[in-house]
Length: 74
Image (cartoon, helix red, strand yellow):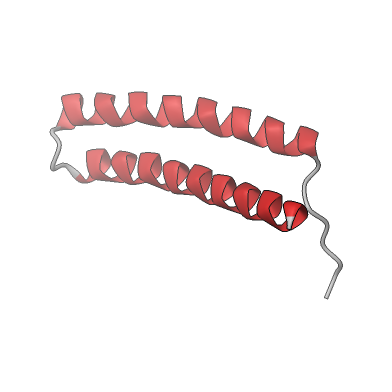
């Protein structure tokens, strides 16, 4: 198995910024799909799922950053 290295601070910052922009776009798309097709339409549901998936990824990155900070201060 190949060695893996954690992201640099710059890479983490860029990732967070890009995810934030993606989240805003996903929210807009979700609202648009719900307005255009109705909240129960599969397209609107999938758009909402995309929005939720991005949020879960952001939370996971925050959790892992918190765990890394705890490990370095211990």
